[in-house]
Image (tube, rainbow, N blue to C red; front, side, top):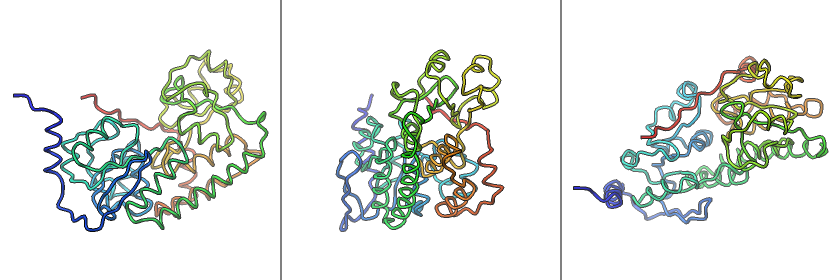
Length: 346
């Protein structure tokens, strides 16, 4: 006898609802404009968005998580430095969610991305509040962080991070404003492999704009878009940036006969974006370091963030990590690719 899937979800949801007193409720409005009512400062939160877990950690709200999606992070480093996150169970990431496992965690709230429409609807039908974030637009990333700060009662810590972020972004924008449009560097991003790239609707391209660069693939929408080597030559970027999960290294591109006549390659303007806990170009707290690194890389004669000092200050302030000059140098010199774990298709 077949069971109606929707009825099954609702029944499971009713069974999973914890005994919570709603005498003091918190009403929030998420990034999509949805109004959500939940227990004041919810203490059982699950993240299924891969980019929000790190923010819970830096504001000291990771004790409110009962499940999380770590995403494309350095798992060994997370386990060593963020043990509270590394030990948490996962009900899946993004759209690859095990609903039964999610319900077993008895969450007061699930943090998801606004683009995961079908999954968000399934969770809501199970009577679990869902608050959605949007990490692909820098302004919305900050608004999403503000929402998380309100939900967790960590408004002060959230404000401290946002103040730091805004101060650095303002400095980046001021530096970029001093560069004439005609002199702004054109950048090609190599995403999963050298001939896949991303459009201006991706966070990476918007971070590049803040740093004062131009994405040559501005006519493309989305990410992981295959392109031909002829198209790259037509775009003629000044700089090629390989993202940390690119399958090829800088030396691979510099020695590849199909790339060798590209002026950026001839001039050895090929770099790999740094990473530490997560890749610096992703919409995570570390992205501010990525923006500073980009501006330094594109305009070494015009701007100069002391990346050693910036790295040490950032990780001390927000990750409670004391790094040495040698640690910072190792981060900047690390050329090993990030291995992305693709969700199971089952």
